[in-house]
Each structure stands twice: as structure tokens, then as C-alpha cells.
Amino acid sequence: MAIPQARLLSSGYSLVSGEYPFSGEGQAALKVTDAVTGQLLGEAVDRRVGGGSIKNVAVWKWGDAENAIKTWSQMINNGLHAYTSGQRKP
Image (cartoon, rainbow, N blue to C red):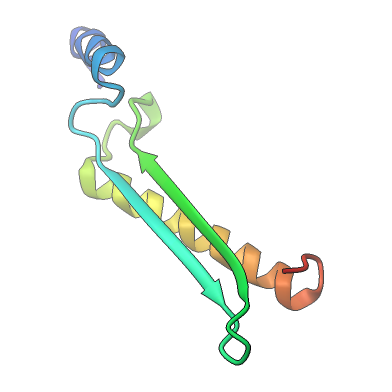
């Protein structure tokens, strides 16, 4: 991504395919239920695809996967905190 000609080619490829070459991706689904009542508390589906940002030049497929996992972890943490603190109701 640091070489201008390669960046131009990868940008063209991303327009056709919807993702950058050599980028990683991940998908996740989550369902949270109450262990006692079985009540559905929440569910989510998400897909993350690595990008072609200049700041991520050194990131390859596994780096993109790591970034997705970190994002999901933070989202789960924030969601569970909202439920336990009373900020969000099921």
C-alpha cells in the first residue's frame, strides 16, 4: 500500500470486489440469554473487512482479524456494562 502504483491497483481491485487485496476479514454472531429464565437479552451479527488505509500499511490478514476481535471485545464489554449498570434494558 506504500507504493503509489500498487495502491492504485489495489484501489481498482477494491472497487470491483468490494475488499482490498491481502486484507483479512471476520464475521461473528452473538446471542445472549438469561440462564435462569431463558429470556433473550440481545443478539448481534457483524462483519469486519480490513481496509487500504495508509496508516495500516504494515497490517496483513492476521492484523485485520486482530483489529476485528478487539473491536468486538470492546463492543461486548460496553454492552454488558450497560446492562449491569442499568443504562440499557433488555
